[in-house]
Image (cartoon, rainbow, N blue to C red):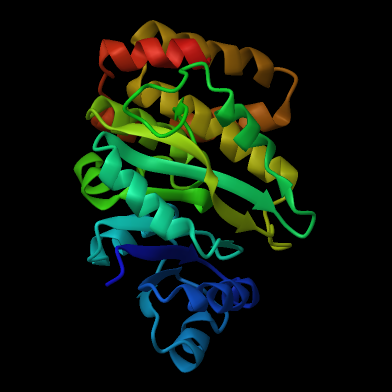
Length: 282
C-alpha cells in the first residue's frame, strides 16, 4: 500500500501537467491535482486521460493554499509536492518513507532538485547542503529554514498541525514562512541529497519583474507576520528607502501595505529558539 500521495496545484499549464503525470504514472501512488480555476482544458483533459487522478476543480485561483486542500484529501502519512512542471525519481518515496520512520522529528524532507534538460543541480540545493544550522543527530541531513516546494515531501500530520501554506502570501516564497511555523511547532526541515526530484521550468511563467515584485512583497509580509516588531519595522523602512529609486520595490511595498489588516489578524511571534536559528541563516 502506498505511503505517499502526490499533490499538484496547477493553473493553465495543461501541456506541462500531462508531461508530469505521464512521468509519475510509473510510481503507482495516489495523485491529487488541485486546479486553480484554469481557463484552458486542464480539468476536462485530466478527467478524460487520467481517470486514476483525483481532481479538485476550484472556481478561483487559491494560490499556494490549493496545496492545503490537496493535503487534506490525502489519506497517506506522507505527501509529496510537485509543480505541474516537476516530477520525482522512482526511488524517492521509498527512501523518504524510510527516513520519516527513522527520524520522528522530521516534518519535511527537502530533496535535491535536478533542473532539466541540463541535468544540473539547482543552486538552492547547494545552499541547503551548506546550511549554517548543520546536521543535528536526530535529522537525516542539514537542517534548513526554507526549501523548494516542487522537491518537498511532508509528514501529513505535521503539515496539518501547522495549518499548511499561509493565505496572506498567496503565492511565491511561501516555503520560508511554512518552515518557520513548522519549527515553531517542534518539527524540523532537513535537506537530503539522495532523494531526487526533477524540474523542467515551464515557459509559461510571470515576467522577471512581476516575479521580483511578488518575492519582495512576500519577503516583507513574512517578516511582518512572525518577526519581532523592531525587525518588522526595520525591514519595512529598508524597502521604502529602496522604493525611492526602484519601481519594483515601490509596487511591492504598496502591495504589502494593502495586506496589513490581514497581517495584524494573523501575526504572532516565533519562539526564541526559532529566532536564533533565523539569525544563524540570515
